[in-house]
Length: 131
Image 1 (cartoon, rainbow, N blue to C red):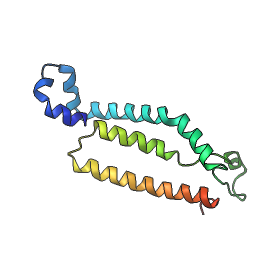
Image 2 (cartoon, helix red, strand yellow; image 1 turned 180 degrees about the horizontal axis):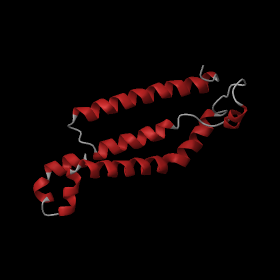
Image 3 (spheres, rainbow, N blue to C red; image 1 turned 90 degrees about the horizontal axis):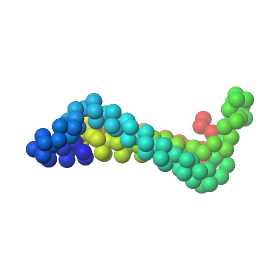
Image 4 (cartoon, rainbow, N blue to C red; image 1 turned 120 degrees about the vertical axis):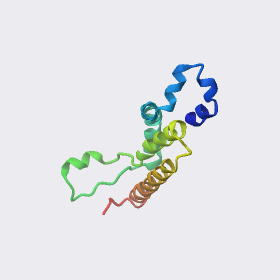
């Protein structure tokens, strides 16, 4: 979105040399990484607390697994939603939304996010660990 705004107001941006940095992909990638991290960290503790309340028992752990995994009992699942939210906000703000590859990669990422959500939802609702 910022890139499209930059292109729209390119004549004004010439008066402000710092704004010309937005045209470089490396700068937008660095800003997108920072944005994604800030979004994920900002929603982190509240999201985890909310998921802990919503899920109750949390992630089930198989009894025949390693003993070290027993410490994970009660850990809330679906933490990938924080990561996907950060990525989505960063792509929306800093990506070139006219580039079809941005949409393809975003769609594939969202599809894998849906797959992970279905897996975590099945673990929590049916209280059965992944087979």
